[in-house]
Image (cartoon, rainbow, N blue to C red; front, side, top):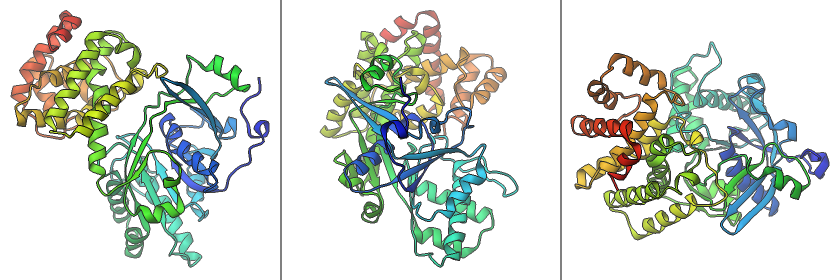
Length: 461
């Protein structure tokens, strides 16, 4: 069977206009899919260069000339399409100078990123070594671009930066980090003013479940397609993208409004952010711990367990009450439950588990504090947190800050001491929590999970 390649499908390379930071399945099944739709409808002819932080040896879509298949799935079936907007992928770990050289191509006027919540951070760095963080690397790339534009007397050219990391006001945050790095690196005031006036950043909210490579179906589907695809991406049919900023200006460069997809330009991104983070993502993390304890591999498999399914519905109802949300949010909750039950989406808990405690802090803690404030039963939320703590104490190490967690366990071997100190640990929880009140309940749940996890779950239904 032929490998999916440009010469096999007679697909030309598109001119590079977008720099993409991140090569994960989500951004390929979300933004690149949307960009491909723009191209296919004839509204643009935009190519992408991907810069990834991982080594070339980890994953390299260049072996397929940047081509891959996106398969949209729903209860009605599946629909494949070839995404051909990616020109090439480079590794910032192995080809950092090539990454900076991309700044010489002033036709690249859009930067899109998806480095997960923990990728969009500020850490003070030095010019004496290759930066470790995405915002610092992007700052140096923008500085190189500025210098090139200055040489060409084209400083009126603008740059459009669209972060897709799941953080509130992510565009504002990234722009602040770029300016902070520029000040730290000692760059001239004229450059910083140029950033303020000519680098347009956008707050975004992305919403689509993208499990990734369709291992369960790939053999059958490749026979249908007539080609082999090692980078195929499975995703749900549902897709929602909200952007806040000077979107009129952006749409002239990147006409997302013409895709026919559910893409919204808004002046209130916070509403969409909270809706998605607290219901869809918070729903995932609410049952992540107990599903792992009960040895379920995928979300779909876990939700066949009636107790877990009932728990999720009750949890989402708790959140809706706590946030005093509207009827539209109830409809969204119903959609979330339907989306989780999509028969094609074998979304693995192992993929959701990464940085689970930090994600819980972002997705679930704000509704919990609202529950406390409004006198709503918080036991189900505390059970979710207890289950996450339980699996980490059992040795789950799929967390960027597991060493901090482990050091706390070593320092406080007793649960009575460990739990209060964990709740105070800013690495995981950056808000002031009712430590004394929550600790006793969490300890009781952890003990009950040790004894009989199924009975512990049923106790909060």
